[in-house]
Structure formats: structure tokens, C-alpha cells
Length: 342
Image (cartoon, rainbow, N blue to C red; front, side, top):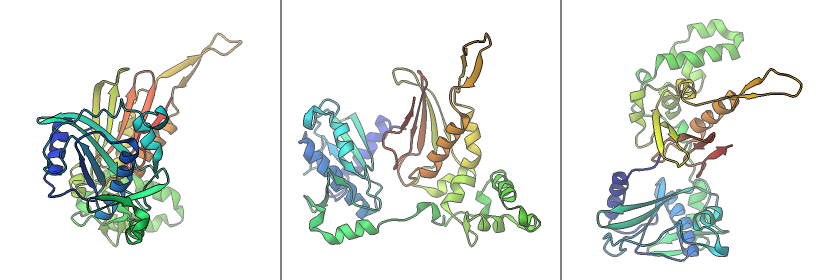
């Protein structure tokens, strides 16, 4: 779900308050060559990883010396890259691995701003067409010249889902959500059903590896937590957005779903228009009816949104239904443009 104008203005103003440009933040007054922009994408992504940030930022329309908004006429949708390719597509293809980036163009009260948000490198350096870059001071340089930083990026991998949510307790979990996996656990492990009947919730959750010695993990909050428990995971955003759009990509309706995600999948499915298609096979007057989408496919896509979302980023997963029968699933931190299902 895109940030609105006021949120973008607040974000840029917060970035402008940084005392200096950093390894994850770069201000530019106006347009630079496509190759330079791509190198900055790589450098800022790698720098964000080293700084423990979820994103790097490249902002056009800001004076790098004073951080004043001066405006820019740079239009990333109009500029062409090498071989007359669209700039954004060319940049996306060049990022390896593609950590994804978001493009925002908006009017700040002091001038027009173009903001790129680039996902942080995860467990390996991000290269741009085969070369990795890094910011050192105010200079952009090749990462290979700084083996200590490169080693640090390779070693930066944490499993957010397995981390303990220090402020959470069993009272923050939804009893109905706990009951559902207990039933499935009983079906999968019929050999010790008598023992399972004596387990309290704490014992069961330890057995199911949703808690660690009774400590509530982030996964437990995402799957089983009460709606209000999502605030315990802040600044992570635990949310799936359903958005209905028309053929011109205008939003017509929306709904947001939070924990417990284990129960929300069925509720989200009720919002999806899965039309009944009728075909007339040869040799009969009786039409055959079938769903436009296999419900299993939709459910599996929703499960992917939940399981593979990078909750450390500022947005939750989103799912759009567009006229002309197209789904778009967006999983932040994994898929930059979503999976389109014709």
C-alpha cells in the first residue's frame, strides 16, 4: 500500500533532519546518469544493511549541503536508460539480488521531490550489473575495495520470525487461533493424543515451536496474536491489505487485516471475487461450471504473503483485485512488483 502525500512529506522531512548524508541516505538536487543512479541503489542497499536499516533512500530535489528542498524536474518514468530501455525496468533488472525499490513522486510544500526507497541487502551484497558498491563518507566506491564491509554484509542474517517478542505473553494470543493448530497437531500426531489432551497452551506452543521455552516469538504474534498485539511488534507492520481497483487503477474499496493471520485467510478469501465460468463442451447442451481461480491457488498465495513478507519493512503485504480479472500479490522485501496471475 503506497504512502500518501502527507506521509511522504513527513518521511522526507525526517530524512532531512539527519545531520549528514550517511551510507544509507543520499540527497541529489537533480538528474544523474542512469549508471550513477544504479550504483547508488547498490551502495545505499549495502549501506542500509551495515547500518541496520530496512531501507536506503535516494532523494532528488534536496540540496545535499543544506538539506533544503529545492525541487527537481527529474521524471524517472520518462527518462530512458541504455538501449532506450525504461529507466525503472533497467534499474530493476540490474540489481542482483533484486531487493526491490519503490518510486515516489510528490509535491513537497517547498518543491517537487522524487524519492527512491531501496530495500536493504539481506545476506549478501547487492550488485548493480555485476558490481557491488558502498558509501564511504561522502564517496561512492566499489565494495571490493573494503573487504571488511563486504564480510560484514555476508554475515548479516537474522531470522526475525524466530526472535522473541520480549513484551508479549500468553495473554496476547487469541484462544480461538491457538485451538485451530492444536486440532491440526492432533490429526498429524495421533500416536500421543492422550498426552496432548493434558497439555496446557504453553506446553503445546513449545511443542509446535511457536514459542521458545515459553517465550512468545514474533511468529506466534503474527499467526496467533490478538489484533491489538500487533503493536508489540512495532516498528514492524503486520497487516495484509485487500484493495479493489478499476481498470484505470483507481481504488474503489479496501480492507485491512491484522493478526491472528491463521484465522484471517478465510476472511480475506470472502473478499475475493472468484467468478463462476461457464463453458459449453462439444456434444452437449449442458454448460459446465468452474471457478475462475482454483481456491487452493488463492489460499496458497495468501499463505505466501504471510510466510515470506519481510515484516521489518514499513509496509505489510498487499493484495489487489483489478477489473479484467487480475490478482496482484505484493510481498514486501521479497517481490518488488508482485506476482501477476492472468
